[in-house]
Length: 149
Image 1 (cartoon, one colour):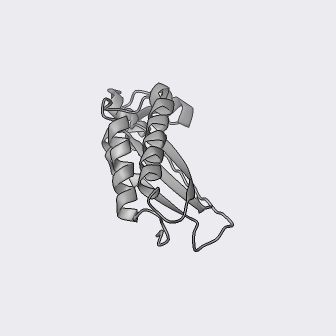
Image 2 (cartoon, helix red, strand yellow):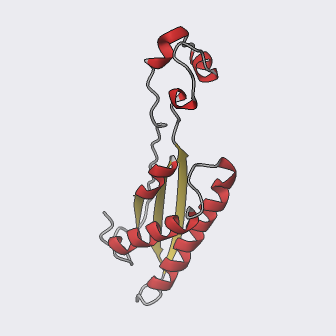
Image 3 (cartoon, helix red, strand yellow):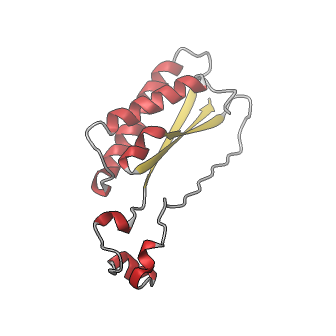
C-alpha cells in the first residue's frame, strides 16, 4: 500500500477506473489492433489527472504510468466445435478425439513486478487491477510511480 502517495490511494483507484472505463466504453471484447490506443488513452488520462491533482502539493513529483492489457484465453468448446471433433487449438496442443471436451482452458498466466532504489519517504509506487475488463475478455493492470523532486 502506498502510504506516502501524493494522492490518496482511493483517489488513484477512482482515477484509474475512470480512465479505463473511458478507454473501453465503446468495446465489448478484446481487440489486439486497439490495445495501443486503449493503453495510450488510459495512460494519458491518468497522467493528466494526477499531475493536476498533485500540483497543489508542497513537493513536486515526477510520475510514470504503466498500463498492461492481457487477453483472456478462450475455451475452444465455446467456438461451436462438436464433441469429438478436433479443433486447431486441439491439434496444436496434441489433443485428439473426444479428449478436447475434458481439457480446461483458463486465463493466461501473467506476473509482473517492479522495484526501485529511491527515497522511501517521498517516492513510491501503486498498482491496481481494473475489474471492468473481465467481462470484455481482458485484464488491465495499471501501475503508477512517483518520485519527489
